Image 1 (tube, rainbow, N blue to C red):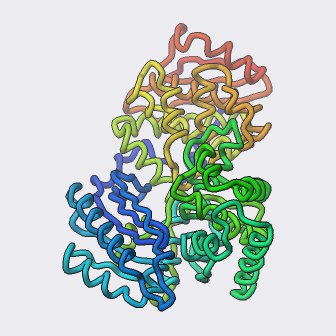
Image 2: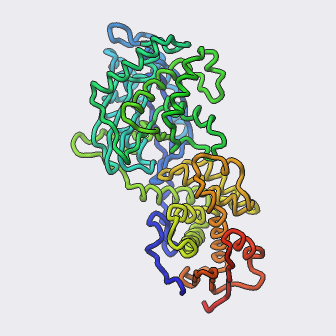
Length: 531
């Protein structure tokens, strides 16, 4: 029996092939200066509804926590280095033509009694309004920046800075609670002498302190279905080091990576057993964090154990991206709510296409709709998540044509592996890339056959997904520009699949029938029908 058109089956985050492109105009540039406890950064970025594109970044290690004296004042060296950093950052921002800059200071400047000296000088000398934000404000901005681009709806965010740990509980993508705890990586490392091959008793004391802080603040345990999200430089470095142990691992970005409790525990042992010099030789180590990373690892592991979470999902974004999205003060009353996940996914796809291949939008949307219809027919409505990834891969296939038409599938897979995809999991990104590579090569490389983020079920059906992708592409490229996907009729039965399409010939898509039968163990018949 022929499959009737069912437009409602296509996920609502996929663009419609009949609509106009609908892309927003070229977004304006924005700049953020973040004077943190461990380092200061300036970031020039292009902000869109789909994500953040960093155009320039300048970072300076200040270690301001070590420059706050016993009287609670930032010493002369700390004041001078901060103002020098702001001067340089302003020059970078102006070099990109950005005149409106959001600048904030966090824990070290909050603790300092002479912060006004810095804020006044920054305004007079460089025209920068440096705001020293509270811990609750910092947590709010971190929530907006870090959670917006992750496929999570409820749980807890931890932003691990040099001087403090910000915790945000959220439900239905709305902020529910905030905590600021003195558990920054630099603060713990300095207080408990964790910088250079720490003694066992110092390490134990650091763990006790972290545990007591979490208990005193009444930080709740997570419930089933909750996600623990981590952001901040220490969190990203710990995950980067853990990912190097997970070879093969096909996704190259840190955004969305999950570090498990076992991996984090092994990292603490590995890092704490080494001297500063030995740590600096670890592949992937950031030299500026060798002295503080054990403190960060202790804080992260303590939180993981306290909340009962199995892993931490890493966000590649945080405070700075939150400030870019919400440059003004946060609302004092009312909830801070984020865009729904499906809206983020839709904007991500549009943003990626708009950046690389806007001219292919309609074709990609039509190909995605065809791929979804075929997959639902041959899989009888099962494997919904894999079908969703297949539709996205079909939509984004033409990204590779921009780089190299003759290797477009492989090139598209590389782009997906190296590009942040807000709203998508690493598993989904790996599924998409694997389908594209399988479609081009007929075999999966080792990094996809052995990786832990793809299940055995994924691998069993990726070959079939690749053939559906190729079939949808062959059908779409022969359809007249005005033809709707409803003109392609798909009928699945126990004897195989029959496709009737307005444009096909005896020599179309050589080899497709054989590859299809090899993967599905059933024949396929493609015939030309009336348009």
